[in-house]
Length: 487
Image (cartoon, rainbow, N blue to C red; front, side, top):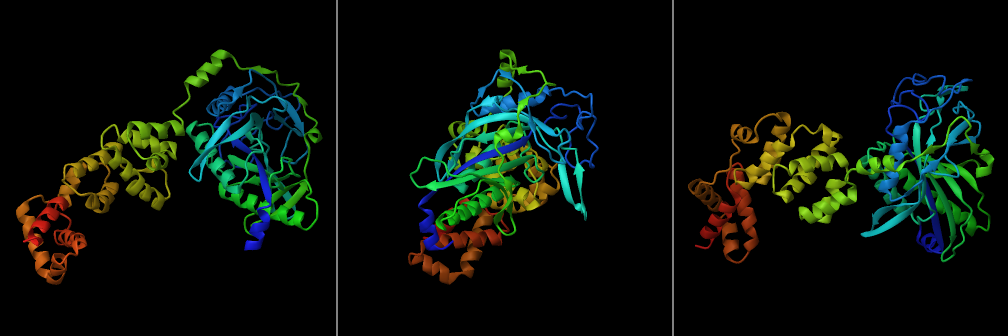
């Protein structure tokens, strides 16, 4: 994007509303007992109910309602007590009924907001609704050269659709919102948030208007975006396209588009449907359902500590910085491991440093999550205790003991350190001899230090560390060096 284009785009405001379909973590589908498992062989998780054979009747999955309400409560939505399902009529090969069962005029959760942090500032993204619906199947176009295959395994899977108001005004804001939403559904164990597997999918409704205007422009929907990064890129690409159309004097056409991640462009799929195109009407096979006060209180009592609550606890009770608290709280399981760790050590800052540093690095290098980390919290706490006692320094613990402990996680860290000859030498006599050797071998640097180049103390400490193979106590080494250099 060149400078003149950037200036021109400043005359426009982008308005974005996001619709996110999140697959609920239920064992069975929304209206049948058919199992739900990603990666199963095609058309193996179906029954006459899923396939809408004559005479079959749907039955509502209570767990799906519970999970939807759980998400709504976490977003401070109003929970609708009296609900019903509607039929959304349209034909597509992977829709076995010829309609989709969804909520239309009534949603189980109304309103609410999700707070995001962008450029150091907090901002609430307002929600319009969270409603329940079933998923469609999957059309597969690359198996047979001249025909499309259909897999109905996903048909009928329980979803919630989380719909924002048109209140997002940048691709970066959309990225932050989706990141926070994915974190929230994972904390709540409502959805696994895995966009690559299709369990969380996003549609972006995008329009532009002159800066300062309150009127909404013609809307374009970009469908089925399968990563948070692609949502951001698609919004950027479509915004640029729409501005170029307006600047050329043409009118934007309301339509549904898709995003090509390779070319970083959007392309048209079809003209955009309106709600009345779907001929919604209440599903006659499903009785309305009500949410009682007892049920609502049970769901409220089951809510876990939410990300912002965890961050506040780490900052207020453990005195961690907001930066550390957010990094540790980013994934629920990672924070859970940290909570177990601090049961065995009161050095909270050291515990945070180990989690953010060596532990996170190992997870990233091995492309695994914390549940695959082999060292138990008690073992990591024991390593922290060795450093606190002066038995090891952090550098040796991180670079030599930690890798060996990963290979033999069942070993007692102190015993392993002894077997590896890593125990720090606090004996002044040994350190004196290492210091003398270093100073004897570096006469020019000693002279520079005595002439005022005090920063060389780090070089001397490092050399003593090298000569002692990491066994010299750094604090005692520094004290002895200073005394000898001042003689």
